[in-house]
Amino acid sequence: MAKSNSYPCQLPPALKPGDRVTVIAPSGALKEFEALEQGLAIWRSRGYQVQLGSNWNFRHGYLAGDDRQRREALAQAWSDRDCQAILCVRGGYGGARLLEDWNWNSYLSEQTKTKSAWCNSKWLVGFSDVTSLLWSLAKIGIAGAHAPVLTTLASEPEWSINRLFDCLEGRKLEPLQGKGWGGSQTTGILLPANLTVATHLLKTPIQPSFESIILALEDVTEAPYRIDRMLTQWRLMRAFTGIKGIALGRFSRCDAPVGFNSWSVEEVIRDRLSDLNIPIVSDLPFGHDGVNAALPVGQMVQLDAEKGILSWY
Image (tube, rainbow, N blue to C red):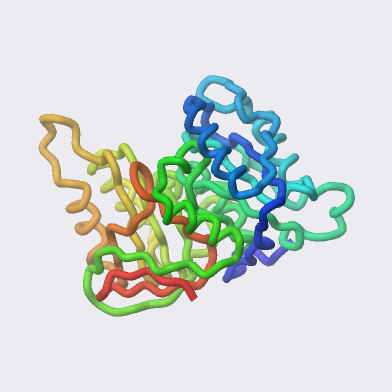
């Protein structure tokens, strides 16, 4: 297996039309059936063979099947030599439950057990709750794509859909424009995440190294005081130590309850991050409820806090 916390992460083989991809639901149960069909249609229109995994429409409470069923679907897709990418149906909650005592190398097929997970890597595509799986792969040095899930893909503008396939098919990615907080440039290894999911992974065996990374964060439906509480936890744990810069995406529907005296989420984020003395760029086009530009995990990037640009090497 690849060395733990190795950076930059190894990119899986580039996809090409005709490849087979597998759809799984590692987290919440599917509710958006029409949106799923639209997402599948986009992949098929690009020439890909799309296979539905064993649990894509399972339901077990709020989960897409019990832990055994969801873990089995992930293991089957990961060990299938004819599957070139794993597409997540949606986020929700439940991905981290699959990773207790999980070992990517243990789920290789008999034909590939002599090789490591690093040698048999394939793309994993998703965001939000899929953060846990993306981080678990990054921990062993394998890149994934922090990108739209199947039920959000059709709502993306054309340029964002094209960007996803550029990422997966090995083409150069264009820079992303945000709002610089002022200061210098920095380079580092990009580690995207949903803030809430990432906070619950801190100091667990799933957390990759934070040394020399540029952290990319987004979130949804978290009131400002909850964002404050999470970022304060990062500070108390000294989790920002070693981080070279922060790229902030969208924090959507993160308003205070009606009638509740509160700072805005933007004010909270500035209060908790502006004294870290590292380059920060906000308002980048990724996250929930809007454009969700694909971000390859574990790759070298440059963050320009003066011009507000996140760019790739």
